[in-house]
Amino acid sequence: MFGYTFYWSMVWEKLPELIEGAKATLLLTVTSMVIGTLVALALSLLRRQQSGIGLHISTGWIEVARNTPALFQIYMIYFGLGAVGLHLSSFTAMLIALSFNNAGFLAEIFRGGLQSIPKQQYVAARSLGIGSFQAYTHVVFPQLFRVVYFPYINQLNWALLNSSLGMVIGLRELTGATQAAQSESFRTFEFFIVAAVLYYALSKAIQLGARLSFWRWVKE
Image 1 (tube, rainbow, N blue to C red):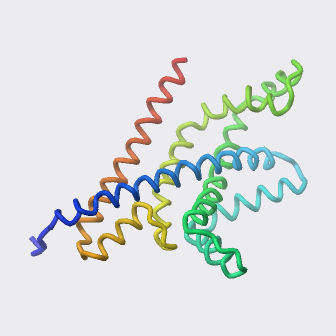
Image 2: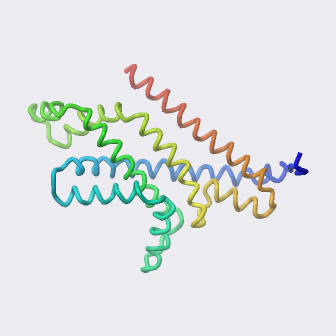
Image 3: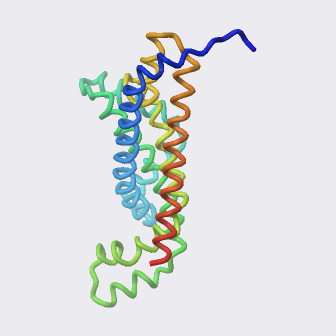
């Protein structure tokens, strides 16, 4: 229709590189979510305080993470720290930036979830002689993750898509690998169509896995 001829053979030759990029994307996504989750749990608890430095730290973190572009955060980690002599690899910088962003959004998700859990649950656990840390990990947090399960999965999916920004600092995740491959052949449509299909497949796999996991969890 537009006089464009598709040449898919070039894409198939570079497909192993795109698959490697997809693996890097998954590693970055999962690792940043694990780190982000741990930090977010701490931030959400600190945010519940009435005063103190912990409240200010958590509030500042959440405000910056949620109200500045993720691309800005990546630049600040990669180029900003580099300007003061701290040079990080593209993967490390992207992991820190994405974990920072995830933690900010997850902290608010967790805070909302914690507000829906009666405080008597924690008090009752403490009255039985259970320590504060154990009360949270064995009583409060299991209930919390049931409440925020699907918003959490949405953030996981968002982290997957945000990982594509790693391309701007030279990271060879899926988008970076795709950009590098198409720059050698100039077959933009073919390569980015395949990349879009891979992103879609990864995203739908996450959603399907989440629904199956939740169904099994509820049935237990």
